[in-house]
Length: 467
Image 1 (cartoon, one colour):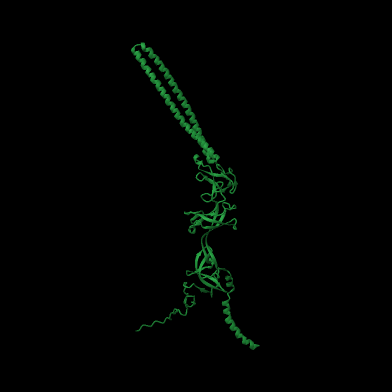
Image 2 (image 1 turned 60 degrees about the horizontal axis):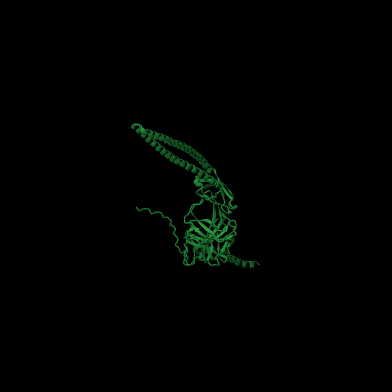
C-alpha cells in the first residue's frame, strides 16, 4: 500500500501543476461569469435616430374669448381679472366666463360725469346769455325803428319850414335810418354769435354724453361671455404662466381664454439649438401622453421656428416646433403633457449595439464580446448613434453578444482588431515591467528584444594629479 501511494503521488503533483493553470485559463472566475451575464445581443434591422422632447397639447384652431374691444376709446388700458370660471369648464353660448375689475372704468366714469356736468352748466349759461343778448338786440332794433319813424314825421312837417330847419330834419332822418340799419346788423351778428356759441358748448356737451355712454357700454362688457359653446382653456401670459384671477388684462392683449376645436390638436414643444438642425417639415413623430403612456399617437412636424427664443428657466436658446396629431381623438385635452419622439433618420438593415457597451481607447472604439466561455476585447468601426444605441459597421456579427460593462479583471483578455486599423499602444512604463503584446496584424514586441537601459557604473575614485 505504501509503495502504491508513493507511485501515484508524483503523478498527482504533475497533474495539479499542469491542469491548474489550464483550468484557471479555461474557466473564468465567479465575478467574471457574473459580469459576462450582463450582456446584450447585436441587433440587426432598421436603425432609427430620434429627437425626444416634451410638449403640451393645444388646439390648432380656437375661438378667442376677449375683453371689451372699445376700452381704449374711453382711456381704459389695463385692469385685472376679478373672477373667471375654472379651466376645462364646458359652457354654452352666452355663458359668463369672467369678470374684469371695474375700478379703472369707474374712475374714468366719475371724471366723465364731472365733465358732463360742467358741459351742461356751460350749455345752460350760453343759452341764457344768447337769449339775453338777442332780446337786447331785438329791442334796440325796435327802438331804432320807432326813432326812424319819428324823424320821418319831423322831416315831412319841415317841408313848410325854413330851409335850415328843413335841412336839419333831413339830417336827423338820415341818422335815424343809419342807426336802424346798424341795429339790424347788430341783431344779425349777435344771432350768429349765439349760434356759434351754442354749437360749441353743444358739441362739448354731446362729446361728454357720448363718453359717458361709451363708458357705460364698456363697463357692461366687463362681464365677458362665451361667443360660442365649447370648453374653456386659459391662455398664457408672456412669462408662460396661465391667466387667472388677479392676472393683468390689457387692451393690447385682450384675450382672457379660448374655446378650442378639439378635433384638431397639436403638440407645442421647444427644441434646443443643437437638435433643431436635424428637423425638417413632414418628419414622423410618435406621441405618447404622460396621463396614459400606453396610448400611442401618430404626428407630423408642421412648423419649425426660424428664430430662437430664451424660455424661462432655460440657459440655452430653443426653437418652437409644432407637431400635428394625425388622427382626431376625443379623449385629448388641451394642456396635456406629451412625449414626442421625432424620427430624424432611418437606416435599414444595419447592426447596432447599446452605447454603454462601447469604450474608446487611442481614438478607436472597442467592445467586450462573449466568445464561448471567454471574453474578447473587439475593435469595432462605429457609425450613426442615437440616444441609446450605435450602428456597427465592422467588427461584429449579428450572432455576437457584447458586455454592457467592461470586466473588472482584464488579465488574459485577448484584443482583436480590424485588419488595416492599427490602434495606438501605450509604451511600457519601464523595462522591468514591460510585457509582450501580440495583436493580430501587428508585429510582436518583447522586452527581451528592447535594449534595456544600462545601469550607471560605480563611481571610481579620481586619479591623483602627477607631480
